[in-house]
Length: 164
Image 1: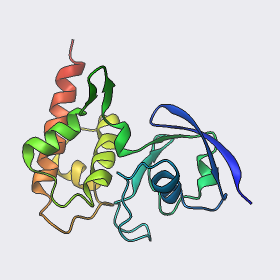
Image 2: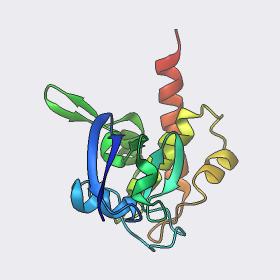
Image 3: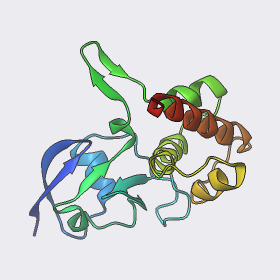
């Protein structure tokens, strides 16, 4: 039997009507039409479906919808700022574009969400730290160097914005 699941998705209060053990990935994509979150493997191995659930990076293909009850969820659609003229890309999204860090687009949403989670932790963006933060996200199209450089650029942008 479906039940109501009250949560906040991308800073918007939402009530989902879903089976408790339905995958959060399916509810996001099918009910809310937030199709930026991709299904890659369906087994929690590739990271394409990564979202932030109450501050933690998770694979939404492994999370039952009932775990979102009372929680805050951030998807790739929530990264961009809503403005009067539409959406403005988040710094990490701009850096991915500028560095050519996005290829086919299957892994990109999960990479962006994982990168945002890493940047929010304010960990120094060394090659090793960025690689570790993105280790759960697989890309089949490109080497990871441009992605790492884009995250490091986003970290420097964020540091400049935070400076007095």
